[in-house]
Figure (cartoon, rainbow, N blue to C red):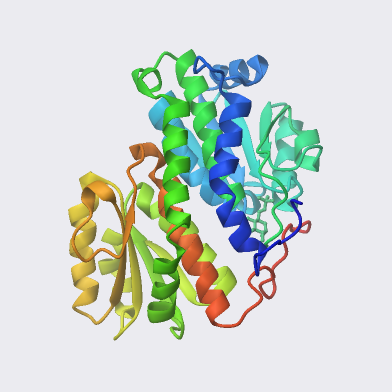
Length: 362
Ligand code: G6P
């Protein structure tokens, strides 16, 4: 059953493995045979009337929002802001004339997000909750709901909800882009690209051994670590670092590669692990040269690189996926690195100390 570990030691690994199926499920639910996006018409038209999207979320859902911003702006050409719920609730930025709010929340119960939604409702704005839990509080209190149908997520560290949220944002962005008649949306074959991403994830979860070895050699005793990248790879680096720190207690930062030299590089010592995510041709060489800077200060590096940009010594190669969807592939080895590092250190992977699956206090 869905809430049974079966042959797995921990739910986290089971849920990592479920990700290709979750993405295929979203395709079946929200994309018709002819490629049309099948999402509530009223929702699509409410989004189409907005001049700006405000994504509000906490934790891993916030990180899925960071990736979503790029997808909404590229496919639907609509300016998109992403906000941490606990910040937005009490320090609202100046809103655009016609805002539309998207709440990303696996559980649908996060108090920080509920607080913002209550204010949005008071202001009279429409909203969408993208959630994994039907009839959850945020689902009931928002104008519209889009379900992730990812199955129960039991491990405290979120994995399949994150990739499902990115896939859901992709589907919405395509639908919105078609209404807005953007060239990018017209060219983007959602079912084809999501299937390709699901297949890439399958390939990556089938190569667990590589990642397990890297966790043992690079992360089993370290006190700290860095994920670096630029652009969407930086967004992935932020979620990758959250995964590693929450389950393995290795102090980990996700950092914009080019910004390291402006201060943070002082933390690099002999053998400090630095994990680079490289999926964007525009910035691949720049990130590689930032890597040389840390290597010369003693860092031990792991490269997670798209197939088309891969070089001889890169440890983890990502199968090709659409440029907008590389975060779906790049996060998988990072989820596995977090899992195996935690396990190697002997922790309860599914129940990290001090954390709760759903936080219902502000
Ligand atoms: C908690 C969990 C995180 C999660 C966050 C937001 O802090 O430990 O894994 O990302 O809440 O949860 P939500 O259900 O709103 O996505």
